[in-house]
Length: 228
Ligand code: TIU
Image (cartoon, rainbow, N blue to C red; front, side, top):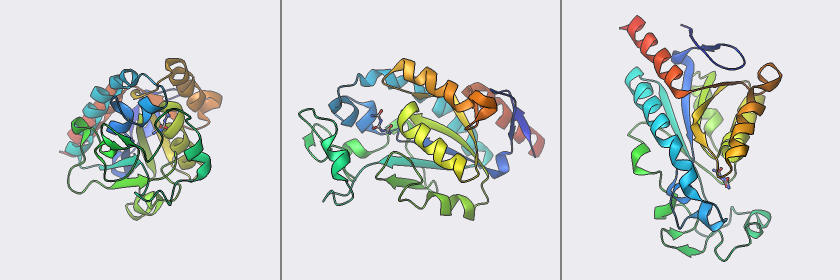
C-alpha cells in the first residue's frame, strides 16, 4: 500500500511494507570528540542535529514492524581491509588504527566504533560493518534487502555528502528507490549538507527524493492507522 510522502522533487510513493530504514554510521567515532571525525580536524558537534529526527523515524519504523538496518564504517583490528590509499589520507597526528580516547580509531570492536547509545540497534536489526564509504561495497547489504523483498530505502545518518551520498548512489544503481531525510543527515560542512540534499533530488530526482523526518513519521502513522 502506497502512502505518499510530501517530498522533493515530488511526492515519494512510500510503500512501508517493502521499505527499509537504513541508518548510516551513527557511531561514536563520527559523533564524539576523540574519534575519527575529530582526527580529521572536524567539529563533531555539527552532527548532533541528526540524532532526534533519526530517533523519531526509528521509533515509527519499529512500531510499524519495518526493517531497520544500521551500518558502521570500520576496519579489522589487523587493518587487512584498510587500503593504503585510505590510510594515508587524513594526515593529522591520529590515523585509522591508532589509539585514541575511545580505543583504536575506526577499528571494529573498539568503543568508538559503537553506534551512539541513543540509536543503539535492538535484537533483529541487522548491523552492516563496512570498510568503505558506501554500504553496498564489500558487504551483504544487498543480499539482506533482496531476501526481504525491499525495494525502497529511507536513508539517514552521517555524513550527508560522504557515506550517506555514496550509499544513496550505490542503491540508486541497484534499482532501489531512495528517500533521504533532510534533517536526519548532517555534515561537518553545513554547506556540503545543503548542496548534497540539492544534488540528490535535482534533475527530477536524479538519485531520489528528499523529505523531512516529520513527513515520514506522519506517513508511517497513516500506514499503521490503515492497517490496524
Ligand atoms: N569524513 C566524513 O565526512 N565521513 C566519513 O569519513 N565517513 C562517513 O561519512 N561515515
